[in-house]
View 1: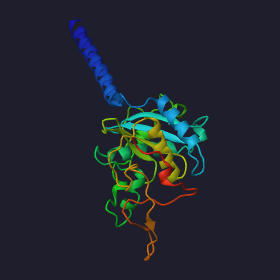
View 2: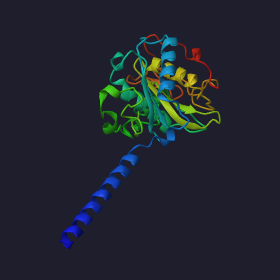
View 3: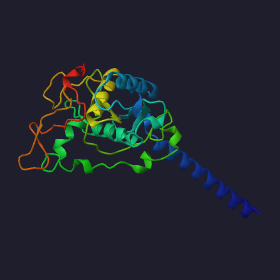
Length: 261
């Protein structure tokens, strides 16, 4: 009888330990602590809806937006339309991928938008192959329930999404101390319109204290650059500065965007 009681005690202790360990694992899996001070889902959505309304370039489609912190943890996901089906479904993950990219390759002293990376990653470019690094975590990207996508309980929130995207729509977020605190990514229209809308979202969030970039425009340091010329040998066009992006349908003047703070 004593032996049975001892065995039962050991088993209960093991179960209790397993429960504690499991709870610890779940806690470690949510890394959203770095999101303190970054926009809430409601703030992101409001900034996105305003940006989509104001920006008239591209196809005038509805958009997805994602904010990540400095560690690449997703802090908020939002969409501008009436429901999650009002935007391209595939653009949800792309917006997160763009946010991760802009955060991963920007520093306090030099911002790189995803639009700035297009030419650099082409064959022969200085960053060729970058787009194949840091893959998206599909377990984070496609976990359910789908009904929560774009809400405060979006399943990506609190997780590291990963991914590298090399066309317009991702911009690093800079606080008033000119420090990188994360990034925003938007997707759902042409890549040029994505950049413009992302730019306006960042401006609306008052997180555009950008000190330097590669655009050649000191008032818009990480702006999209249209300097790609046809390659006389065929194939990919050549960017004069090495950070150019192709033009799109209904492309607007980059200088029409508000200057950074």
